Image 1 (cartoon, one colour):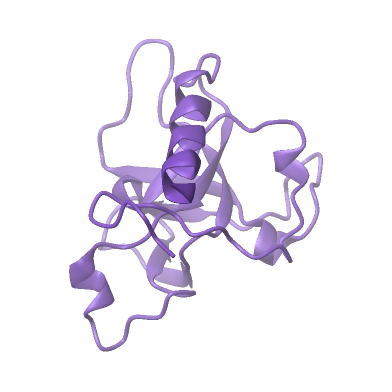
Image 2 (cartoon, helix red, strand yellow):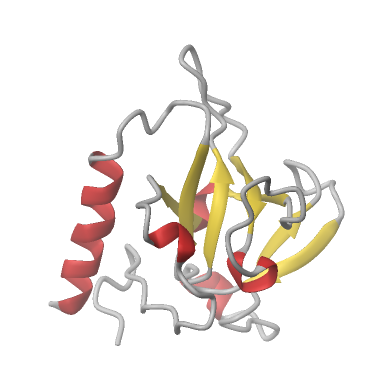
Length: 147
């Protein structure tokens, strides 16, 4: 039941996001990985999603994110089209970057695969969420009721 409520909140925040496809900053959370990734002997819940320095597997690995990590992203869309490359540009990672910096020059940057994150409009108070809070259990298609 708790997972259904969390999933519903994520869906509502995505559906109610004004101009979600407008160019600009969004928030995102790293989802639970699929079963095949969890079965990998090197899988770690807090470090499994690779951040790269460009939108593709040919680009250098810069680090890893974990399930529930909060991110600031830049939409790959403008008013006319969306980039369907399958990659999202990360413009900040609060657990690494600390509190909100108005000019965002010192933020971590990189690229992650779209299918492993959920983007949504940043509520004003969520953009300042402390990185020290434990991440919630995130539902996935394969596991709709994580415990």
